[in-house]
Image (tube, rainbow over all chains, first blue to last red; front, side, top):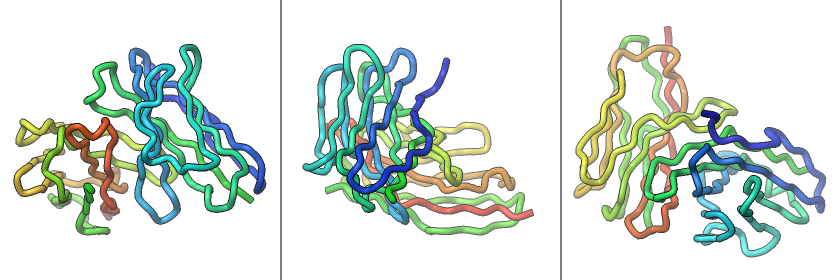
Length: 114
Length: 113
């Protein structure tokens, strides 16, 4: 049973470009969460999604960031017009259908904005 | 607003020592608490999950306890090994909080030969 998969593992973008981060949850998991770990800071919640629904986006910056989890395919975290302050490790986690359960994390995508 | 604090921030011990990592949280209305380890440049590995109705969980050399009323959890590592060197994070899931985890600040552990 493969774990949570994220790609790419490393992503380099220049200021103003778009970044697309992908997350495939564990088999049988229908809840996906995105967290961000800024340099020298702790992990912070960004958004919680179920298939085709955003459940909680209280941690998502209001501008330039969006997330989706379509009926088919991986969850996508999209950052438009990236700035240097977006450089961070972005982690995806998934949990089982009933929500209040152990979250399993992917290896993360390390975004560097030049 | 839930705040999670971990002490110490860093810890260096000789191999074989038993050690305790501490986690405290300000809002006791939690559904569960998870302990993770994070290796440099890597993702998070879930170590133990304690439901709010439980007092402790054990896995191998690891034992985690939870005192919800006082807002504290401890992770006990027995007979530490160099392979235990990592950053240890605790995270709480608040009741009615929409399933998101609030993470602590982490304890960076180094076990020396």
